[in-house]
Length: 383
Ligand code: DCP
Ligand code: MG
Image (cartoon, rainbow, N blue to C red; front, side):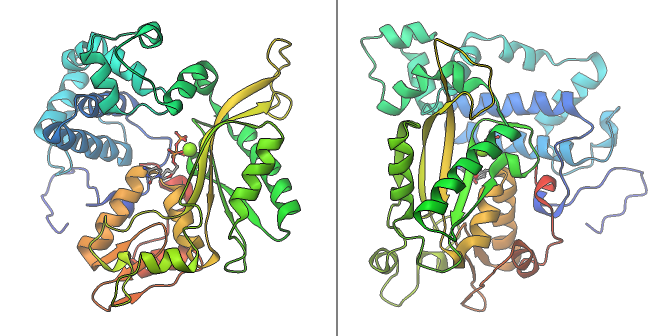
């Protein structure tokens, strides 16, 4: 950033989206500790803790972005990405191999119980903390509790907990995508689908399978998701599902999101542009053969989390960037776009607020060009 300070100190770009961040990096132990602190801060909750969580996230992504293993805290003390707290933790780990604070949190009753609850599909930090405050600690406590009522989503998450903890390998995700493609080939020939999320970024194992679906001819995708889900349901593949933003792309729905001057919500401040993509997410149940798992006579199928997202063709490139992620990459991309270029970016579109115009894109490369960023491959977006 212009400040050349004689030392051989390490440099990092301001925003994560300006860097290359791959799954492999040099500072695993430090990143693990900072990520634990981030997750702990989120579980504590409240505005202040959320700020601290973001600071830990910024520190951990900085460590992931460094080109070498850090041996001495002086090497990174001039980086503006690291706050005092993070620097102190890093220094401690570098000098004695571990951090007292991190280990204390890791072994605390609060962290263990809330983390366990938070791992259940449908349970966010607020609910995890609420249950902890009510004295609950284990799954048995949840099942036997008379003071709490699980939502259908949480009940389903709890019932399928063990199978949902099994990682979804890339091969399994590809087979699930192939199966979905076969179904949409029957429903509407010409429809396309691809694996997005962590698997597209090169992860060999994910917590779910994210599939983006579209038809090259705008509008043809309408009604598709409902038909697809109906077919999957008939096959017995769906254990629990939630459909959101169904028919979000009908003309009426689009007009409802558009104010009187004809400005849709993306023309406002960033963050206001919600994701209106049609989506079905839930817990699916696949024959073990489909997943190439060893046969189990007691249980012929295995539960997996699946996200099916449908995008109109005109929004495909933006939906692809958004659903490829990762989450922090998106956050930095949107922040950068707004702060540096006054462009409001979402999973649907980008709106240039200076020029007062939408920026149509047909490839990811188009979007990077608009944003004046070097193109990053999906596996370089793992911050
Ligand atoms: N996404 C997002 N914000 C959210 C949820 C999702 O930006 N609140 C985007 C970024 C994610 C992508 O969607 O990378 C897929 O979401 P997942 O939760 O499935 O995350 P990943 O696929 O990246 O990781 P995992 O391997 O845990 O599934
Ligand atoms: Mg995923």
